[in-house]
Image (cartoon, rainbow, N blue to C red):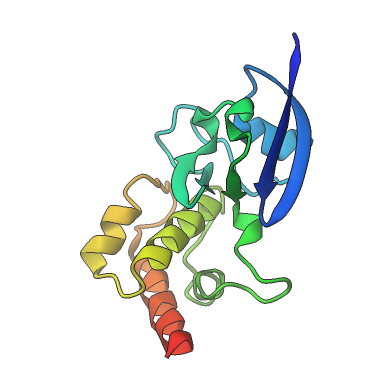
Length: 160
């Protein structure tokens, strides 16, 4: 099968890779770029484990073909931290034990980051709505919601 040259920005770095036209962006990120944070949970866009940001918008990487990433700016869970300094969301997830097996965690983090980028002071209802596309089989969601609420407090405190 012919391969397409793809040039895009991933986590702030310009990248180039070759991909078959029918390769998902999720597989290209994992196999071609070594970014294994996004997970394949369902392959149908229903679970959110593969959530990434494409040009600032939440997307399921399993539903995009890799060549569709041409010219875009992508953020994965690996791109949320600033070097060795965790993003407040990552820190509050750790401190609040808002994860168990970890398969869904990267998708929750990316979706929550998109929410806080747009609305740094969301209500509980807004958080639940923003995370509705992310499923977890291990937790009851309460710790996840509390971790996002605490991260919002920290983000707002840092911006004041």
